[in-house]
Image (cartoon, rainbow, N blue to C red; front, side):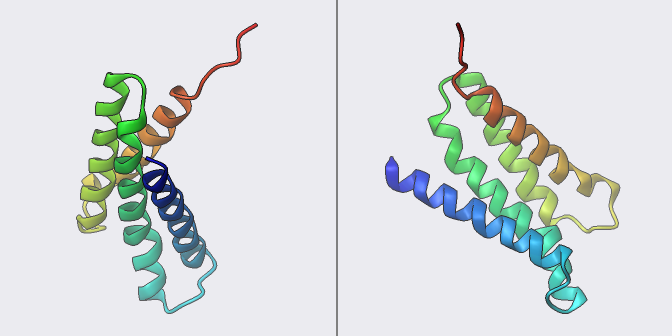
Length: 107
C-alpha cells in the first residue's frame, strides 16, 4: 500500500515537471507540446488510477477510475478534435474527487 502511494506521488511530480517544461519552452516546440499536452495527462491519469483504490467511498472510487480514463484517452486523441478536451474534464474531476475524499475537520 505504501509503495503504491509513493509511486503515485512520483508520477504526480513527474507530470508537473512535464507541464512546467511545456509552459517554459525548455525544449523544441514539438517536445514541449508532447510533454504538456500528452505525457502530462497520461501521467496524471495513471496517478488517479493508482489513487482510486484508496478512496473510502465506492462511488468516488469509480469516479476516480472514470477521471483517469478520460485523462488517458483524451491524451491520445488528436489535438484538433474538440472532444480531446475530455482530458481536461478528467483532470478537473480527479482533483475534485481527491479533495472531496479528504477527511474534514469538524468541531
